[in-house]
Amino acid sequence: MPAVLVTLLVFPFAVSVATFFLPVRASRVVSVVSGTAAFVLALVLVPTAADHSQVAAGSLLRVDALSVVFLVATAFLYATTSLFAGGYLHLAKNAAGARYGRRFYAGLNLFCWSMLAALLVNGLALLWVAVEITTVVSALLAAIDDTDGATEAAWKYVLIASLGLGIALLATIVMYYAGTTVFGGSYSLSYAKMLGGAGHFPAGAVRVAFVLSVLGFGTKMGLVPVHTWLPDAHSEAPTPVSALLSGALLAICFYAILRFFQITVRAIGPTFPRTVLLIFGLASLLLAALYLLSQRDMKRLLAYSSVEHMGILAIGMSFGVPIAIFGVLLHVLCHAAAKGTAFFGAGSVLRKFGLKDMAKIRGGIGALPWSGPMLVAAVLALSALPPFGIFRSEFLIVSGGLSDPHDVVTAVLVVLVTLAFFGLSWFTTQTMLSPNVTEPASGNGAVVTPPKGEVSTWIVASMAAGLLALTILGVHPPAALSHLLDHAVHELGVPR
Image (cartoon, rainbow, N blue to C red; front, side):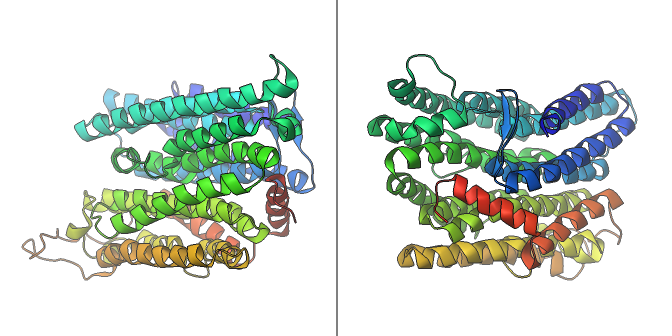
C-alpha cells in the first residue's frame, strides 16, 4: 500500500512534465490514462482505509479514511475532466495551437497533482504548502486564454486567495504554538502527533487557530464573505479548469478545515467549532440562494451553486451527529460528480452556441441530443432530486439536523435549498427545454439554434460517467464506500 501513495504522488507529476513536451494528441491520451490510473489507485485504498487502518509511506505521506474520501472525489474528477478536455479543446493546427495545448495539459495535470498531494501529505504545514501550490497553478490556468476577463479574474483570484492563505498560514502557526505547551519548541505537525496531544493544548490558542483556519482556507472553499473571487474565476477559466476548481479544489480546502476541526474538537470540545461553521454556512447558503435567482451566465450560475453546496457542507458539520456527518462526506463525493458533469454540459453548450448568456440560448436539447438532456439531469442532481446522490446526502444532513435537534436551522436550510433549486433550474430548463429558434430576429435576442449534433463523443462519455456515479451513490452506495464514510465520521471525533 505505501507504493500506492508514492505512485499517486509521482505519476501525475511525471505526466505533467511529459505533456509539456509531447504532441497534443499524445498529451490528451496520456492525461486520460493518468486520471484513470489515479482514480483506480484511490479505489484500491478504500478497503484498507475502511478497515480502520491508515496507510503511510515514510513520515511525509499518509492517508486515513477521511483523506481517502476526498482522494476518491478528486481522482474521479481528474479522470472525467481529462476525458472531457479531449473533446472540449479546439486547437488551431499551427504552432500557437500546439503551444497552447502543451501548456494546458501540463497545467491540468500539475493542478490535479497538487490537489492529490494535499490529500496525501502528513501534517498541517505540508497541507498548507500543497494548497498554496494549487493556487499558483490554478491561477495560471484561469488566465491561460489571455483575454481581458480571464486576466482580471486570475489577478483577483491570486490576490484574494493569497490573502486567505496568509491567514491560513497564521492559523497553522498559532496551532503550532498551541502544541509547544505539550511537545516543546521543535516538533512535527503530523496529524497523529497533533491529535495525540490536542487534549492538553491551551483553549484560547486553539479557538483562534480554528477561526483563522475557517477564514483562511474558507477563502478558497468559497465561504461567504470571502468568496468574491469564485464567480469570476469559475466563469472566465476554461471549462475543464472550472470543473476542477468547483468540484475538487473547494472540497480540498474544506478538508483542510476539517483537519483543524479534528484538533479543535479534541482540545476544547465540539460546541465552538460547530458554531463557527454554522455561522459561515448559513451566510454562504443565504447569499448563494439569492444570487442564483438572478444569474444569466451559465458558468456563474454553477459557481454560485458551488457556494451554496459549500454552505450546506458547513451547516451539516455544525449539526455534529453521525448521520449528518456521514451525509456531509457523501455530499463531497456527490458534489464532485454532479458539478463536474454540469460544467461539462455547460462547456458543450458553450462550444455549440458560442456564448454563455442563457437568455440568448434556446433549443439546447434540440441541438445537443445527448449532452443536453444530461446537463438537465446534472442540474436536477445538483438540486437534490432523486435518484441522484445529492438527494441522499442532503436527506441525511437534514435528518441529522432534526435529530440533534436544530429544528430552526434545519428549516432554514430546507427553505434556502428550495430557493436555490428554483434559481438553478429555472434558467437552465428555459435554455435547454425551450423550442428551437429558427429565425435570427427574436424578442429576447436569442440566437438561431445550431444544427443537431454533439460537439464530441469525449464530452458525452465524461458526462455519462458522472451521471452513472451519481446514480450509484443515490440508489445504493457500495458497501466498502459506506464503511469508509462511517470510519471517517469516527475520525472526525463524532461518537458512533
